[in-house]
Picture (cartoon, rainbow, N blue to C red):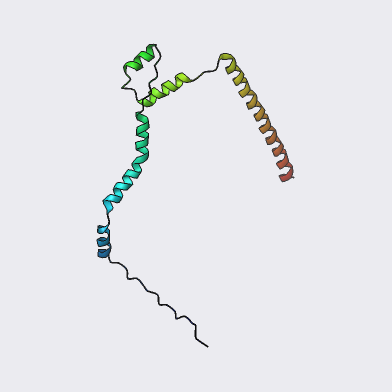
Length: 134
């Protein structure tokens, strides 16, 4: 019968690098290129924001004292505030009747949920007092 036993392979132990060898190896790598690529990658989102921010959208400001003041000093006011003002002008505010209806609805829901919570609290209080204290 033939002997099919495999001979155990010897484990090769890698000789640790010296500090000098590691320094020489790291000098050969192209570090500035990696740093440049990392910087470019990090700046991509900021560049996209900058491109979007450059698209100026001017809506006419109201013809009143505040509008005239803002029109004269358009370059002083940051773009964010100008756009916020334009968005506020586009809001359709509810009338007096609709505001009253919504206010009443909020009060009804608040009272309803307050009653539900107080009933649950009262029930649990009685339950625990009967179970724990007796």
